[in-house]
Length: 130
Picture 1 (cartoon, rainbow, N blue to C red):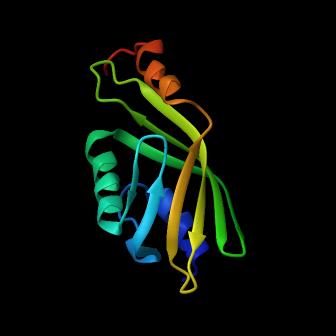
Picture 2: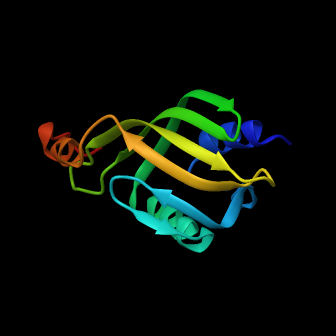
């Protein structure tokens, strides 16, 4: 199966059952919160999201490949585990770089909002618990 199809399917079921075999062992990851190297830390980050975010969802808006670079546009959303369970949303994009074996060696996420904007979402509209 081709990497573009694998990524599309991974986004649809995120964070469950991700295809880690498409990443190099020493993959570099960076976003506004994390910066690390290694597939084991990448797996731990995904497990953290799966464990502590409620109803996480990754909506994929665009997926393009040009040479050894794949660019995605997405929105990550989840309910925060606060008592009023606000829905948090981060729109952004990723740049994935491939090595000569076709494995992802760099995964850098960019957000269309600041970390402060994300924190504010936790308190901007209290929702009732259902």
